[in-house]
Length: 141
Length: 141
DNA sequence: ATTTTATCCTATAGATGTAATAGGATAATC
DNA sequence: GATTATCCTATTACATCTATAGGATAAAAT
Image (cartoon, rainbow over all chains, first blue to last red; front, side):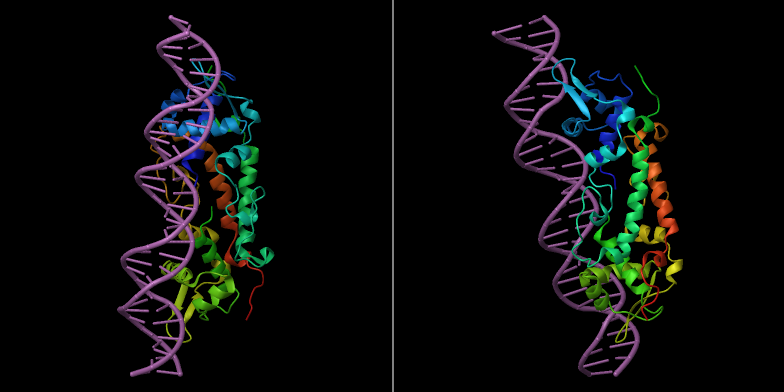
């Protein structure tokens, strides 16, 4: 399941992508427009800033804005930051690998074999989509 | 994340697929061979029996066995029974559809647009894999 | 300078779901 | 009738996710 955090984070990024690049948008505006609990969104945007997706400005006229062009924001990196591993099980994860306690040999494991394929198919989707690809209109102005 | 239930269930099915079709295998044997907590496995196998994947026999010489040939057991149905929805969000689920409270229009939702693609790619993997495809050797005897 | 505005940051409460176990009932074999 | 193994319900323990609280910091307006 996709967490609410990821869902809200993606929607916020998508909303910011429809506004002018570099122009701060307030949390309250995003929250009300996308029906996201404001305080929860606050913590999500904070983490997106700390991971290099957003810039921010404090005080009146402040808010969050995209640092890069939507076409340069890959879904792989967004998902990894918000949701964590793309793989459904750590033993097939590229960025979050962990061995299974119960599995003596990954090469003969049926679950491993299946989940490698699922990971690769999800990866190919995330890799071919940027933020620009999943929003509707290019610029709202 | 793949739940332990799904992981264990898949491993158990894979193990049964390497034994003779229709020949009962005891929970204890599967559990020890696959390093699965026995009582937990018990409840998983029970649910796989109730959903038509396994047959069972009580008493001495009893156990669980596959009802169908491994090549006729599709991963789509196994995953849906063990894990639930294949989609990462209910609004793109074929079998477990649910509308998002916060989303006024699915057609213009960026998350929806992305998750449709992820669902389809996962589905195509699960559809092209049967239990026979993900095990190593055909029959152990 | 002071007030206002809005982000920054940590901590924490509450809700939900998962993993695992307990304990006995049922049925088949020996 | 004793033994074996599945059947079934309930419940505990734990982790994670969702959301909020409350104040600190910084920038702009007055």
